[in-house]
Length: 474
Image (cartoon, helix red, strand yellow):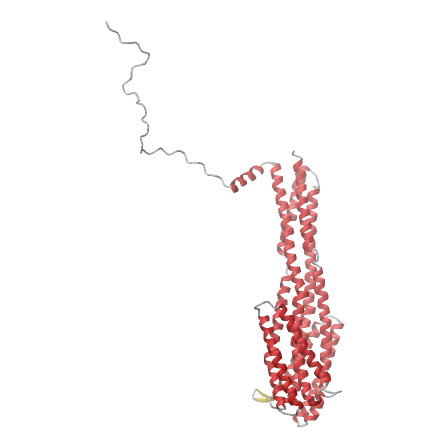
């Protein structure tokens, strides 16, 4: 009988699992789990800061960094804002105001040259050397002023165009004056026509251009004042914030350690407090000086310059009224007037207003005295002019001429007194301006560098103070 072979393996069961069939080519693979998103450097940094903030040493490091950053930022902003204001104050004192005064000087020189030319013309062949020298001196002064204005004008600016225009018109005007003198010495009446034509060029083209230059330079001066005087609020706000943060840090240290003082934080607080106090007090003093230089310097100078220009124009019109002898008229309100006498009256009105304003703005006896003297000279001038005009209108030309360009008792004497007194007042107010503006600029001296140095020392003190606390955990 045959027996099956013995085996340890169990016979296969019906329905048992079949072996897994390997994936066939072309069949889709099962998707694996998605890779974790890569973290950014910023996220990792935030995580580190969060982790550090859970321990006291980590918190101290963060506090030290914030304190140092605040103190340095305060010093940087203070240095930046004070540097800008100091530069603007320096421009006020050494650039824009001298240029404004120079533009006024150009206007005055041109107007005075026109007056001197008409006075010399009235003298005829007996023109005095003083009259001729005054005219030449004024022309040279105007030319020198134009050179300075051209050197300081920005390319393409209105000032550059105005200076170029005046440089073109000045030789033309001189040529007309020389022709008028030549024909006048020869006794030809056409000399008067050339003088009137030169005066029209001066009054209608040159003086308006000079006034535009003066206005432009005044606008630049006002802009510099606007940049120099505002309070540095950003720096002040940062200084207050830095002091508050330092105070909080010291209070926190006291609560945790019962130690009243942390030397490093105290040093940082002291440095920050000094900078903030220096900033506020220094800028307040500087602002006061600059405001004083504007109120008692610039405004007074403007009133005096306007008054002096009005007196020069009035004198020129007074002379030309005798040159034209009624040839130029103007109709106002249906009534006809001699054009030069009419303009003289307007100029004297402007002169009176300017002297009144200058007297109101003068803040000391040295400034008031020459203005009062000019007002007295103006009153006498108006009386003498009325007498001379009466003689002229009555046909007494020679008597009128003697009362205008003669010696003692003539209107020319009054004009010279008005002009010299106004020159004295201008010199005084110019000195007042320079003193006040200089004091304002001096108040900001060293503030920029001092703020930067003290801010660095303050930040170092804050870091050292926090470092001292950190050393207790090592």
